[in-house]
Length: 486
Ligand code: SF4
Image (cartoon, rainbow, N blue to C red):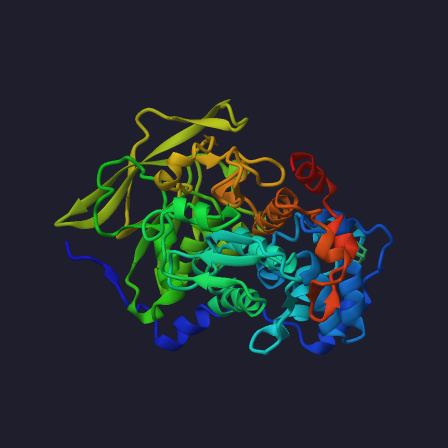
């Protein structure tokens, strides 16, 4: 049987249209009109629902008077990755979900307004972040995804000399390589890294810490080291046929769609995606948009246990992705080195496991075969941190154990992001940004803070204005813990 995996399943124009951002930007008039609906609530619930505590009514008020610069300043003072978060935040579960207008009317479109307020920075020569007065201390940041960049920018605002180490040739981590272009184009993620660079953050790209630079050297050369490395790979399924060439890792597949010409990426006619998290949805929708005729998500539990956000699910359904619930892959079938099918088994839900979710149980005699040409694995993420083993960092479930301020058991090492804490790969980007900020303040407190120093004296600025004190006090828990530990 010949392979039905090809490039150019669609004309070039269709391919490029399919990978353009699906949510169009607001026009100025649309933004001003939407901003005009906001009630500018006192003690606004939308602020409390935002993990980075953006002063949402304040930035919306500035849009209403066409003051995009002032609006961006408010956003970036709390969330240094405000452009990314405007696109990828599950706003229905966060700020928009808590908007008082949601109960009887439509909630304010906070995400789209945030995008309107900040997008003008892309392609401009603005330096939205101004560094704090130099304090003579140096910090190395390993990884330039959302946690690393948020930590680096915050530290720079506090006056640190910051050097980011990135294994890939471009900065941005997940935002650059791991989120499909139709949700976040590469240019947005690179712009955010460029803002950090303009503030004086140094980038050492194409350099893997632990291979090209020993971590011991960083510990000797810097006052503190922040680990914000991504997990980077999908675990093995552990089933027969997994090594066939048309069995792909979802992360690598999505990365190809972001960095390679779309008409050079082969795609099957019938694709099965294993898993039902946000990465699985991205892989499935990208497959459809590359021209796959039939794309199925295979998930061993039901819709109720699906880890993907509801809006991702709706989006995938609109793209024509088929969801096969209570179905588990048993083996991948092949002929002459080509994937020809996926043998699956029907499941039922049993007793809850240790994570509280119902355990899937195989139904005997329910095996069936789906004809497919390509299988994409999206069953979580794992990282290899052998290079850190000598530091004796405690880990649980493959992630570093950290304190509320990102501290680890090592006095010079902090961590946040996918590699640390409980959130893991399905943690929201905005939560990871906040964790990166917290770690920066934890480092500052340990290295001789107080952490609010640079904010308080007005040295650090966002788009020319001092960082407001309330942004520094928005998460008192981590400031307290940092001071307590110093
Ligand atoms: Fe505006 Fe809604 Fe926030 Fe109130 S809750 S300030 S209406 S966005």
